[in-house]
Amino acid sequence: MEPSKRVRDSDRDTVAREITEFIQTEFAATTTIDHDTPLITQGIVDSIGVLRLVRFLEDRFQVNVQAQDLVLQNFRSVTAMLDLVINRSGD
View 1 (spheres, rainbow, N blue to C red):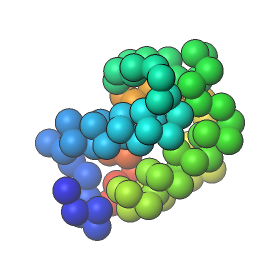
View 2 (cartoon, one colour):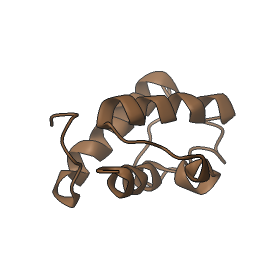
View 3 (tube, rainbow, N blue to C red):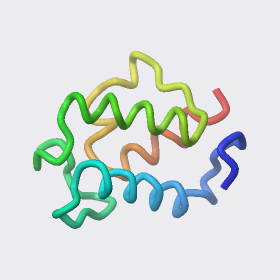
């Protein structure tokens, strides 16, 4: 998927896979995660990790994560981040 294109609902599987791979590589090398794994409550991602995720999402998917988006519910799982990317794409 081209990072400069608007992320559409049809891209959900690709985006979710890329987010999962990033988290698996950067945070959870010894833990298997799925799209609904509670990343924060299980201690896989902490506050610094959320900042790293924001940078990844912005760089990879060309979205602008706003200050009001920086709430735990948007980073609690791969599914939550996927929804954030889709909602913010094209802004």
